[in-house]
Image 1 (cartoon, rainbow, N blue to C red):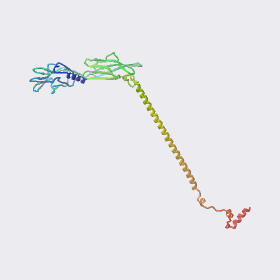
Image 2 (image 1 turned 120 degrees about the vertical axis):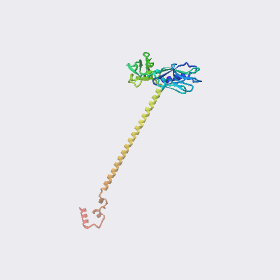
Image 3 (image 1 turned 45 degrees about the vertical axis):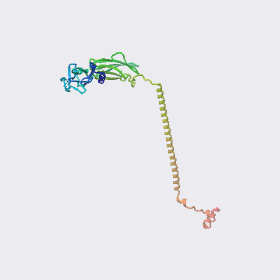
Image 4 (image 1 turned 30 degrees about the horizontal axis):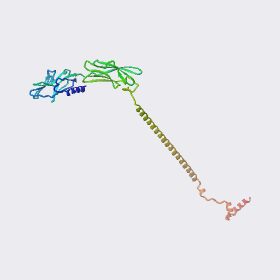
Length: 330
């Protein structure tokens, strides 16, 4: 919240001139923090003029004389610092520092160069949201109670269907506490309920996810109705069809390649078996031929007696001739 306060103060500073000496700028600061107060107009000192920062128009905080000597009042010793541009730094502010601060040049003519109304605030207490749920077949109602540690609370009801959530008009949406803080409950992005406790210098919140209490079977409650354009639907359909077709073609090609690969392996296996079989036959025949007795294969056949007689071989002995003749007669 501090940046907002500073932005507001800056907007006032930018529109300030010497004639607007009666403008009082509100400033909020957190307890224990440092407070910087700037002058809002140029400071011109002549002769014996004294520049002062004062509290509640009567108590001098600091005085700067023409010879540049400085006097700081005892209650502020060690707590304040003045810069070359006449800005005042008040350190470690307390609740007792709440009040009116003014800067000016005092002499023959008094000129105000800045006025502030300072409010000191403590940090807000944490806030917690309690939820009660009532559901039907088509809707879910959440009653959220936001409570703080200093006994302040508000409650509001939220109605959700399958697509949207809304905050009912009845019930509290915000309230100002006794300490000046704001306590609010509101719907955020259609999917969360926020309990917020804040003042001008600090804030605290509790975030309640609606999906944790309503439509637990669904993934997430969308922030609003989902509308898909017909063009998008057609594009999605075409894309899905193309992807499926490509996958089918790839699977078919893979199946054909696998089938051909298996058939080639089978043919190679058959050729190998035939080759082995023929080799076995050749080896068997070769072994059979190798087993023929060498004497029978190489020895010349002896002529029979009859062939010698018929050929008129005169070298045949008489005894063998008689035997042949005898045999013929019989």
